Length: 131
Image 1 (spheres, rainbow, N blue to C red):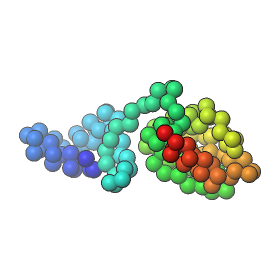
Image 2: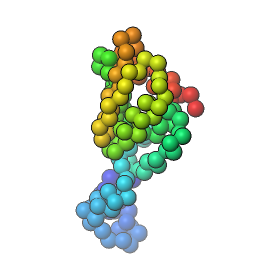
Image 3: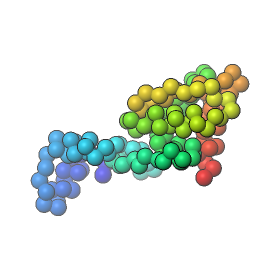
C-alpha cells in the first residue's frame, strides 16, 4: 500500500468503511512506516533485529539513504531506527570509524582523517553486500 487514501479505498472495497484519519491512527498504532523499495515508497513494517544481528543485516533492514560530507557520513532510517543502526556500528568497531551520533531517523558517523565520510560509506556498502 502506498498511501493512506489507497488503504481507505481497499478497505472500502472489502466492505470496511473508515476515514483517512482512522487509517492514519491505526498505522501509527501498528508502527507502520513509509519505506523506500525498488518500486517506490510504500507502507511497511520493520522487524527489530535481534541483538546478535550482523551489521550487514541491520544496514539492509534500516538504512534508506546515505550521503557524505567531509569527515561525516550521514545515514537516514525510518523514524525511530537511527539508534539501532548506530548501536550496531558501535559494536562492529569498524576501522576508520571514530564514533556515531543518532537522532530519531538520522545518524552521523565520524570517519577518521584517512577514511573521511566517503570512505565510511564505501565500507558500509561493502558490509551490506556481504551476506
